[in-house]
Length: 332
Image 1 (cartoon, one colour):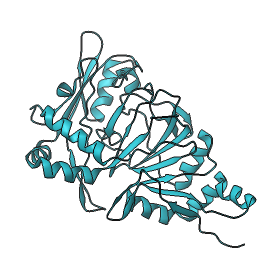
Image 2 (spheres, rainbow, N blue to C red):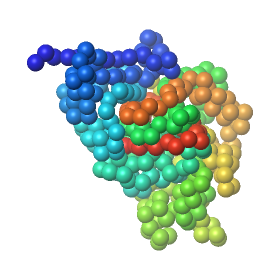
Image 3 (cartoon, rainbow, N blue to C red):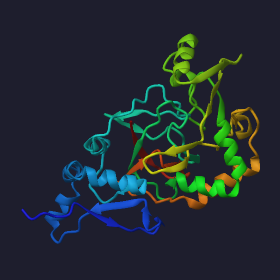
């Protein structure tokens, strides 16, 4: 049988290039001349075998670019997506006890909903579970239902963000490196999926017992202050913000400085320097502006799989008013 190169690297209008390296890299099926061969090339089974045989190439590509979009394959269901994720062979990261403010629901295997927030709400740039003792190293996203407009998962390179912010605000970055950040979040007892920061402490810690919640929180590096209304203030940190990526020998911007701006969780209250001092609102806004200026927002197509290196890429969600279903899988 004649051998074909398994992938074709294509360019799309939204890509950016840093030192001639595309961000993200986009892989599609190898173009063929016959309908039958094309169907085979695009099939999930062929993709799975290709991933297994081309794992060193894919790992190298992800390390070089930070994100890889796999587009044009016949991936239709959560089960298909789960099979694709498992083909990569990365160890699964347990989602129990995650501090995601929105929560996730298991769909099949190691596949979860990306979050439970209404699609018309914006989610700011963040590294997944950046406050956790063991954040995931890689994230997979899969578009099952593509919105007709908006709803993109925007991505941005963390080291590029760090360089720009450090150049503009060197003293601010020095203070971040010295003190880190403290995150404080007021949450209720129960979930309310109508806004970000809405995940209650009962589902966060998988218990209705406050003493058990405190024990589990302590293991996760979280302090709890109970409120008279049954809610709790979750306090985490100080946590490092500027990290060093040894494999790429560069500093990265590993934080979410957006804050939750509802239910008493304004950004000025939510995040402070590790010494307790407030962050400048003007500098915070400028940091978010830099993130937006450097990001890539590719409109989803059904069947897309986006693989992200969580150590070097931040992601966010653009709002949409049309139906949207994006699934996720987290890896150690």
